[in-house]
Structures are given as structure tokens and as C-alpha cells.
Length: 171
Image (tube, rainbow, N blue to C red; front, top):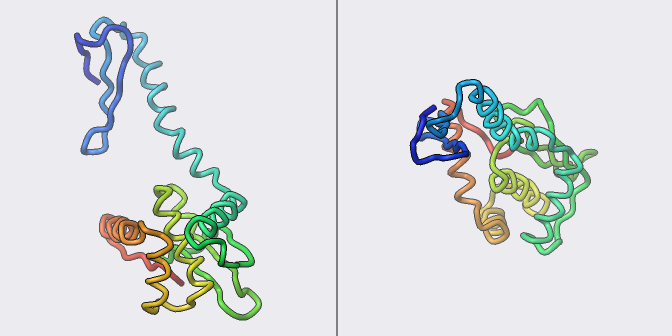
């Protein structure tokens, strides 16, 4: 927390490079008001995470439908898509053949990841409904449909590096 002469009435907060939060308050702010300001900042910080945690299988389905329309011209089909909590290293999987043909599972551990990375994981699994392997045709199809493929893969590798682990994109 830092008191500033330039601020007159309202406080400001900003995320620092080390991840901490700096709360800037007007120099004349009474000490009794500080707990309320801190509580307000905390609520603002928790709101996006709370919204992401509330994501449901229905949200996942509508997200997959949107990606199918916008990225793949609505040409892909799947039977079900859902969040699962038992994937720890694998981010998603798509069954091809058998009783679960066309079933897509997405790891619940990535619910808090940025939307564009989550969209990549979904698009990746959707692409497996057309190309079940990681052939050059699969990658061409995915990259053509989802232009942020390489950025998302870089994000995933970076998260894995930061956590000292390696994620796999498919089961």
C-alpha cells in the first residue's frame, strides 16, 4: 500500500511484476477506511476466478459449438463434451471408435486458464473427430481452423515449465 499526494478521492490498485498487488490511496485516507478498500480489491480480484470456476458442461458444449462454427465451418460432429477431474497431465481427450466414439473430455484443471488457451484445447480435441492422430494433416487442419494454435501451445509449455512438469495435449 502506498499513500500518494496526486490521488484526491479514489484509490487505485495494480498488479506488480512479481504478482503482488499495490494499493495506491489518497494521502488523506483515514486508517479506518483501509480495510474496506482492501476488501473491495480482493472482491475485484476474485470475481474472474469465481466466474471461471462456475463453468459447466453446458458452457463447454456451447463453447465447442461456437468454435465448430467459427473455426471449422460447422463441419465437425461429436457426441458429448464434458469436464473431468481425473486428468492430471492430459489436458483433453477425444475417443474415436467404440462405445464412447465422439466423446470429448477436458481437464477441469484448466478451467482457470485464459479463454484463448481453453479454446485451443477444445479446438484440438474437436479436430481429432476429423483426424484421430497427430499427422501433418491434423496439424494443418487445426492451425487453419484455430490461428492461435502455436501461441496456446507455447502457453501450455510455459505453464508446464513453471510447474516443473510436462502436459500432454491428448490422452
